[in-house]
Length: 497
Image (cartoon, rainbow, N blue to C red; front, side, top):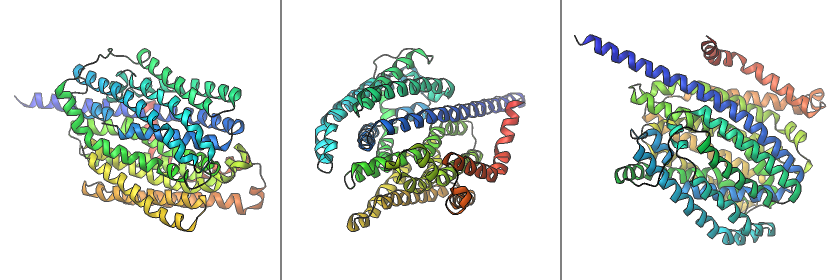
C-alpha cells in the first residue's frame, strides 16, 4: 500500500531536480551570453575613454568605485543570500522586510559616502593633487546608493527563482544606455565627472526597469520581527565575509593609490579590470546559478560533494581557457587597443590573470560554504588574502619596488586565499586538487606557449597585433578543444535534442 506514494514522491523529486538542472543550464547560458556582450561593450567603451581622458581618471574612478563597493559590502547583511537560502524566501512578509532593509541601507550608504568625500580627497591629494576632485566626485556617485536602495524586490525574488534570462536582459539594456551616455558626456566634458553622471543615470534606469521588466508584486514598507531576526542572524557572518571580500578585491588599488603616482595606478587599474573579467564571470555563475542550485539540490537530498563534482570541471575549464588567453595576448592587446601611455599594462595583465584563475577556484568553494550555511568560512578565507597581502606589501614599501611588484603581491595573496579555501573544502569532503592541478598546469603551458610565439618567433612578432591575437587564440583553442568537446558537447547535444 505504501509503495505507490513512495514511488510517486521519488518521481516528483526527480522531476524537481530535472527542472532545477534545466534552469541552471539556462541561467548559465544567459549569464555567459550577457557577460560576453556586456564585456565587449564595456571594453570598447573603456578603449574609447582611454583616448578621450587622461590616465588619472581611471585611478580616480577606481578609488570612487572601491569606496562605494566597500561601503556596500561593509553594510551587507546578506539580503540576496537570505532570500535564496531561507525557506521563507517566497513569503510576502519576508520579502517586504528585506526590501525595507534595502531602502534604509541605501540611504545610510549615501550619507556615509558623502561624509568621507573630503577626508579621502585630502588623504590622496597629499600624494597627487588630481585626487582633490574626489571632494565633489564622491558625492555625485553616492546618489546611486539611494537609487539602488529603491530597486524593486523583484530582483531578490528573481535571484531565488533563478530567473536569469530576465535579469540579464535588463542588465544589457542598462549597460548599453550607460555606454552611450558615458561616451557622449566624456566627449563633451573631457572630465572624470562625465563618468560620475553616467553612473547616476545607469542606476536610475536600472531601478525603473526593475519595476517594469521583472514580474511580481510591489513591495511595501514593513518590518516583521521574525523575518528581521532571521535575516540579521544569517547576515552576521555575511557582513564580515563581504567586508573582507571587499578588502580582498580592492585593497591593491586603494593601497597603491597612496604609494605610486595616480597615472601608474590608472594603468594598473585597467589591467586589473581586464583580469577581473574572468573572476566576474565565474562569480556571476557562482552567485546567480551555482549557489542557488546547490541550495535547492541540498533541499532535495543530493549530497554536496555530488553537486560540487557536477559543476567543477566546466567552471575550471572556462576560467583556465580565458586566463590563458589573457596571459598570452596581453602585449598584443595593449599594443592594439591603447596608446603608448598604457604599455605597462601588458606587464601587469599576465600576472594578474594568473591571480584571477586562483580567485575562480576559491569562488567554487565559497559557493559550497554559503550553501551549507558556513558563511564564517567565507570570512576566514577573505581574511587570509587581506593578511597575506599586507604581509607581502612590507618588502615593496621598504625597498621602493616598482608597480609590477604590486601585481605580484596581488597574485600571491590570491594563491594564499585559494589554499585556505582548499583546506576548508577538504573538511567537507570536497576533494578537487587533482583537476585543479591539471588545469593550472594547462594554464602555465598554454600561456607560456603563447608568450613564446609572440616574443621569440620572429615572423609572429612581426605580425600586426590583431593578427597576433588571432594566432594566439587559434593555438589556445586547438589545445583546449578536446576538453571542450568532452565537457560541453553532451550538454549542447542534450539541449538540441
